[in-house]
Amino acid sequence: MGFSIDSLKKVAEGKTKVIYENPSDPKSVYMVFKDDITAGDGAKHDVIKGKAVTDWKTNKDIFEFLNRCGVRTHYIDSPEQRVSLVKKLDFKINLEVVTRRVAAGSILKWSNVKEGTWFDPLITQFHYKDDPLHDPMLDDDYVDYIIKAKEGGHIYQEMRDINAEVFVFLEKAFSQFGIQLVDMKLVYGLIENKVTLIDEISGGSFRLWPYRTENPNLNQENVLSELNPDARLDKDTYRKGESLDKVQSKFEEIAKITDSFKDISV
Image (cartoon, rainbow, N blue to C red; front, side, top):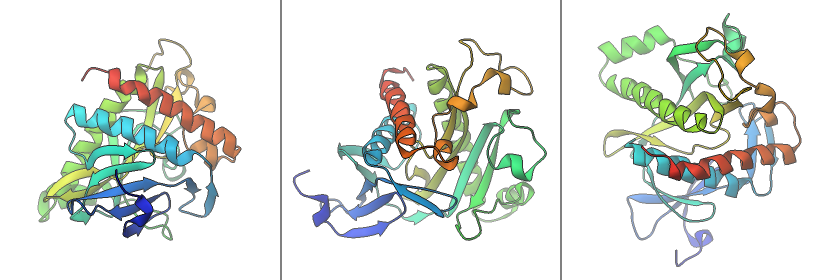
């Protein structure tokens, strides 16, 4: 890069990343990964040595794959370890967009659905990003109303469509390694007035459950018997209190898988 990241002006800092200006291009910024990990809307916080590099690898592999798939993203390049070069936002949309294939996590607490329920078609929900309020979910009917009746409603439809598109791309990719993509949360912004996938996609962005057998039967209402959540490769290991070494090892497994995404034809 020809200079030290630490010498650059810090634009913003979040729980797991720091954003720095790019003095050579005002339309892009540097996104630098941290070793921090959080859960419970920041209530639980630890530092795992090496996590930044691992997340950076996974993020690099996934965004390069999605760019090849034709998804509109902010990702440009990864000039060095822990550092991604991304397009500068015009506006960040303060929502998390969650798409689900298999019922797991929070949906089990606020609905009557059973763990392992298979969603076909996919379901996508919007959560307002607010830690003190625990990221409350927007009512689906109201989102539909916004899309149909409100100025700017197309933004919600575009986020919904892109999320589902990205989910299918990644679901197919992980399936080649005997892994089911269970659910996924992504973040969006406006760049040149276009809805664009932003932020990071790493071990904390989704749930990944290995298949129990080589050829699972996923054509049924509930697929829990076909998947192995006990061997999960995602951030739930941290949420459930596993050792930090085990959490890091799971994230490293994800990075090994996504390293092969470059060989997948799109």
